[in-house]
Amino acid sequence: MSYPTTETLRDRAVAALERCGADPAAFGGGAAARSPITGAEVLPVGHASAADADAAIGRAEAAFRVWRTTPAPARGALVRRFGELLREHKSDLADLVTIEVGKSRSEAAGEVQEMIDVCEFAVGLSRQLYGRTMPSERPGHRLMETWHPLGVVGVVTAFNFPVAVWSWNTAVALVCGNTVVWKPSELAPLTALGCHALLARAAAEAGAPADVHQVVLGGAEVGGRLVDDSRVALLSATGSVRMGREVGPRVAARFGRSLLELGGNNAAVVTDSADLDLAVRGVVFAAAGTAGQRCTSLRRLIVHEDVADALVDRVVDAYSKLRIGDPFDDSTLVGPLIGPGAYEAMRGALRRAEEAGGTVLVGGGRRLAETAPGAYYAEPAVVRMPVQAEVVREETFAPILYVLTYSDFDEAVALHNAVPQGLSSSVFTRDQREAERFLAADGSDCGIVNVNIGTSGAEIGGAFGGEKETGGGRESGSDSWRAYMRRATNTVNFSEELPLAQGVSFL
Ligand code: UN1
Image (cartoon, rainbow, N blue to C red; front, side, top):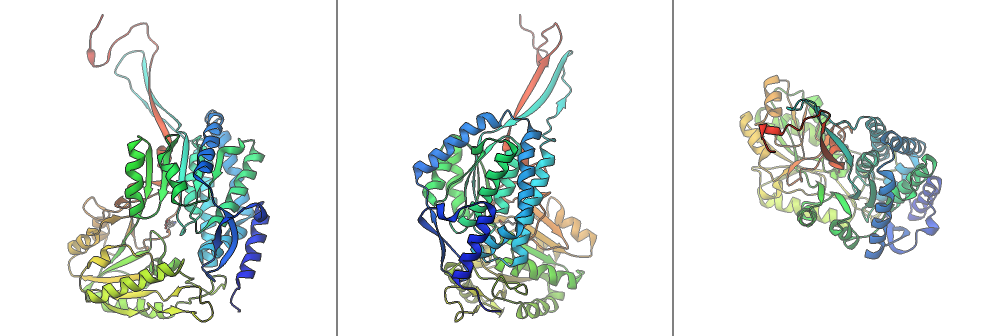
């Protein structure tokens, strides 16, 4: 199979966009969409100014005034239609994800499926925005809570899940009665424009206000407007810890709400009773899949010393057979890194790991440099570490798996938790006591804790997010919707008396 040229990628992107109802000729200029498959510019796109962002927030705020009183099940009809359009255009959007982010076909389609799934979830949710009724302590009184729409939700997303994370926020925010202003990653503008076109069409067909969803392409300046504008009731941002450290306090300073999904440094503990066949598959997908560029990617393997050599040999063997290359080739498992910076970061981390006494067992090299000089295909690496050195405690957004060994389960849990991040974790074991211990209050300190599956690839039905420097936000399923609404507590007196709570007498 021949390697794609930038021209073929451009043709494919234009065709996909047009089928989604987006007109590439109208995208304007000032910025560019690039593909990590060749490293070259695929299409010019617009670049919003701060004033454009302010105007988009204004339009979303005006639409909110209509949308907030539209009955929630009617809001669900918009998301249902959008979900249908996503199904119809699954392969178009997957093309755009592969072109802009370099994900394999299967993973790109999986990302679109994640959008479809969350739309279905949100449609159901539109009839289940339940408030509680509590027994009042006073006769002839009713105590209850009502959930109301919040306002404009700003959504800032990262390149690695350019659309799934947006859809978790947007599908749920819309059924909750909010409107959305989206600042997609500058590395994935086409995918964003394709999704926006489909959502605009769904809004028109479902009779929703045209401005329920706004997209603003741009960088830090545009993002900064969403951060500082008090018309943005909730800012949901996915990105680095550094970004979260800056954004969180700024939103808090204006008493806005923020929902942060920041870095992960996810680990799997493999005990001596683990099913190693299962563990090898779980580990390799979580560590090397998506070229190690998921927030949930497995970065640390904490393995019992009695099974360490056997497990590591098998993981190394699987790594040496991974198909690395053109993500449009169906046999490819590992596509390119997002760009040269990611490869440099990987090389730098490997160097630091070696300086700290680590041994690179496999990987770290660059592939296809002659075929595609502008693309950065990295061989996923496994590094055996004597201790959990500084570099292991940091998140490097590249396929590096550090291996540490332990002898006592408490030691494994302590090593596991001794990093600043707290997103995802897993334990591979056949011992129920170990599994339960890992799930217990003094076990893993992460927001996602799995047994006998890897750290990545969560379903949308659960709440997604993590603790510590991961930022504490929860998105997607379960009751994450509550972050997108405001709660009113209502006490209703239907008696002819006015008894005061706590037995207070007055007048
Ligand atoms: C992310 O990497 O930002 O659990 C999101 C997973 C995916 C989502 C990852 N469902 O790996």
